[in-house]
Length: 342
Image 1 (tube, rainbow, N blue to C red):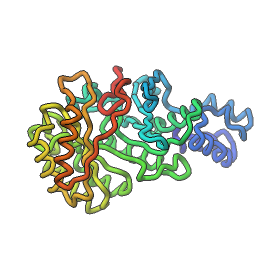
Image 2: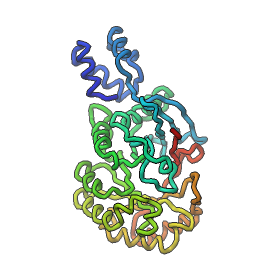
Image 3: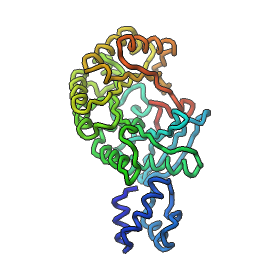
């Protein structure tokens, strides 16, 4: 829902301003999905609004649920017929997280990522980005799922920093206390390394969690794994990360997908340690290791014992490190698996 346009439409229909306030809480906080459910509105207004607009700019096309019930993946159709995927995750008993997309497809082209093989179709609008979170709030209400959507990660389809204007607008909407009311520290944005935007992000959103999809700490290897590295090599990224720390003093998450025999060797661990040390205080860096989720690519996942050994090397260097939970593998809903052929 584009809230500003909706308020303007209510005004154009000759309704008093308080009618918008009667709509705001049911939609954004309670997850109401139709105007007909607004009990404080007269039937005439419900009918007029139903003809003029829809609460969601997206329409559910397909829903899949993981066997453990901790991951749900939705294929959503935009008004122009383009399709995106978004995921609802339950990483802990008390927490629900939405993984949302910022583009239809992705131009970065990482060869291990299913979305990267789609190419880029277009950017999403701020409304389309935030409507993914709104969709999940509606879904949880309809399915009577206990709890509240409290966390959002921009780690779905697309490169958020390549759509910086609309991403920024969407972040402000999600954090707006009168709308979604999400805490800044409950939102994470991940980039493949658009260096100039890293500095802008530190200035614009110093309290929002920031993650860099690193995947290799050697330029030659990273050129092949994360092609945007050719435009923004590690030296440029390093300087941007330093400036980020100077401006925000917030922890940086270094995302690192472990690919068997490609970036999980001893030399790769040493390169990663050296890169981290060159960025800034180690207490402000966290290496998030991700065991590769299989896609239609020649890459293979590092064995769990080897992933643990890699993690141990990082931690022995006094760098915080975890291995991410890979929820939703069985429904292609895990990191790097999102794709929907247009």
